[in-house]
Structures are given as C-alpha cells and as structure tokens.
Image (cartoon, rainbow, N blue to C red; front, side, top):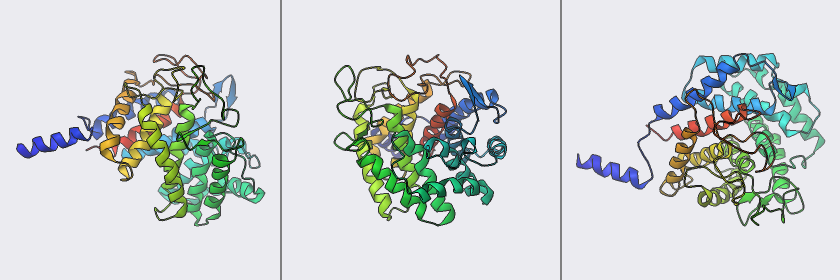
Length: 369
C-alpha cells in the first residue's frame, strides 16, 4: 500500500492524472466513426463552394491521422476506407498534376508512403515518386513560401528517402526548409528569438495584431511543429539533419509552453489576445509535438506533462456526444480567418481537423497504460 501511494505521488508530481489508454482511444474512435459514417464513400468529392477531388490536402491530413489511429488500434475497416480512397485516385497526386510546385498537391504522398510501409507494395508510392523527382530535377528550393507547406511536403520527401534509400529526397527537403526558415520574406519565416514562425512573407515584422503583439498563427505553427517530428521519425538521431531539426523543435517547444491557456487550449493567435479563445487544430498539433518529445525522451516529462494533460482535457472537451468536433477553425491563413470559432459551429472542412485530433490523441495514448 505504501509503495502504491509513493507511486501515485510520483505520478502526480509529473502532472499525470487518471486517464487510461483505452479511454483516450475511445474518444478518438468516437470522433473518427462520426466522420467515417458521414463520409462512408471516401471517393466523394468535397463540395465547399466548388467540388474538389478527395485527395486534396485536407483529406490527406485526415488519413495521416487515421494511420496513426490504426497504429494504436489496428482495425481492418480503417485500412479498407483508406485503400478505397487510394485505389480510386490510382495513388497519384491531387488532380493528377505532376508539374506543379504547389506543396498542397504533395500531401497525399505521405499517406501513400505510409501505406507502402505497412504492406511493401511499391505501387503505393511509385506514381507520387515522379512528382518528387520533377521538383528535384527543377532544383526549385524556394517553393515553400508559406509555413503550411513544410507540413504538406517535407515529411513526404523524408519518407521517400526511407522508401527508396536515396538521400536526394531528404537533401532537397532540407535545402527547401532552410530557405523558408532563413530567407523567405527577406530574413526567413522563423523568428528564432521567440521560437515561433510567421505564416508567410506577408506576415513578417512588423505585422502585428491590434494589441501590438506579433501575429503568430496557431495552426500554422502547428503545421511546422508536427512536420519536424514526422521528418525526424524518418532519420537517425545521429544524422546531421536530425540534429538541425531538433534544435528548431526545442525552440518551439520552449516557446509554446508559457503560451498555453489555463483551459488547455492555445489561442488562434499565439502571442496575442486578439481572437482569444479555444481552438482545436493548433492545440491538437501542439499536443502531438509535445507528447512526441516526451515519448522520445527528448522533453523533460516533469516540465511538459502538466501541459500535455491539460491539452488532452481541452481536446476531449471539444468532442460532442455524437463525435462531432467543436472549436475547430475553418480554412484560412491567419487567426482572423473563419471567425468566430465556436463549439457548435461546423467548419468548411472538417477532415483535416479530425486528422490532427487523431494524431494528437494517439501520440498521447502511447504514454498511457
């Protein structure tokens, strides 16, 4: 009994609380089943304002989350849903476009590569490989002019190196990443002093919110934070690229910690009180990144677990009884986009929000019994 009490006290000191892996996965399943029931045919185009093919970036982010859920909860119908989607699109890029440099068209490539990792069928990634090769052949390293692009494209290049053993893919990705970080917009989009990213070249200093604080968009910074983790997953800790990305990751983790709200969310504008309130997509990504760091032994659990636990409570509070996700900011490029954000408001696209929720929830579940 005494040993049990000591263990309980140790857990409380680390910020742990009574939550089990099963309970977390149950919430993730509920949110996912709501979506899969609503979109039972994954080939159906999205129809917000205009029809878009269903392998656009928003749906691709959902499948990244579904694969993360499958990793912790391997149910066959998850892969059946994904395979119907991938087969319908012939495992090709969005709009079957091979010559564009738009990173959004590449996001589906991450899904295709991860699916290949599960069954070894090269047809999963062979067509999207042509897309990556075209960009490398053009030697075009200045295409990621907005930070969302780091998430949409960079992990795919890293996975292509894993799939093929050819370093040219990660080499290209790192050159492109450095240009975005250090040169885009004049001085780069990463504010190293604050550990946060400007959204694109239109937002670098002196772009500020109405309260005079710098405008750092929550979801945009989340895109980068998640991408850093997912690229490092494809690298060895001894790799020079891993060490470089880890340095940026640590700056972000340190910056994000004091910006978390008391309710566990992060504001849409990270450093500002403009548009203050709960927002799920950024919070889910920060949950993923921080939990990833603790799970890898990179972040100090005593320091970061209280924030991670609070973030989970916030994420859980966003889930309606039927699985619908509230507090999700719709599409846009800044804190002011798709306002107001509300528990009951349905966003224009709900698939990417669910994908990010699943990434965060499943990474959190890994640290629970």
